[in-house]
Length: 107
Image (cartoon, rainbow, N blue to C red; front, side, top):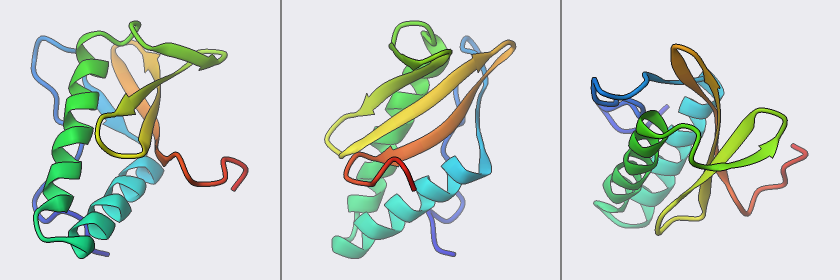
């Protein structure tokens, strides 16, 4: 399936906790990239950059975002209708979902 060739969401700098995407979260990222790139050339790359900013923030300050359920936290992807849901699992941060906010959460 498409996605951003040669690029994977989640690479975060060495001063941060490693950010690891569940396979489902990687699929959601790839689908979002494909959708936006299909709308306009370069828009998928803008989406990827916005997600990367959110992942960098998660890795560097994992406890700074809103807890939405038990130990699951959420941050918003700027300029796109997506949220990143994650859990801190020392020594890493595990991304559970890169979720389109228009999607039914029960699916």
